[in-house]
Length: 61
Image (tube, rainbow, N blue to C red; front, top):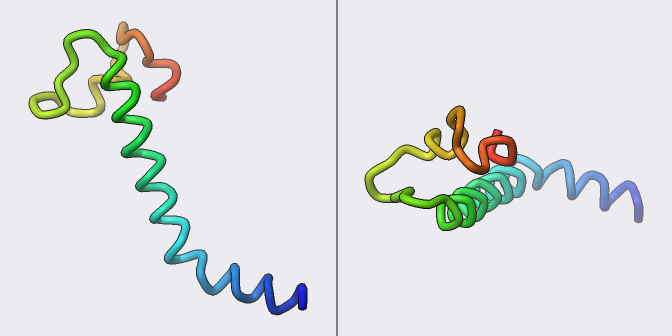
């Protein structure tokens, strides 16, 4: 049973991990962007959230 589970997880990893990573990125940028004063998701790049002097740069980077 354990061998089957490990095989299943390994076979699904190429599908599951990018989805989790994308969600993590979207949620993280959404939250940090909302907390950053004067940040606009529509007109600024997300790299501005991690720029030197940004309020949450340490968390983003």
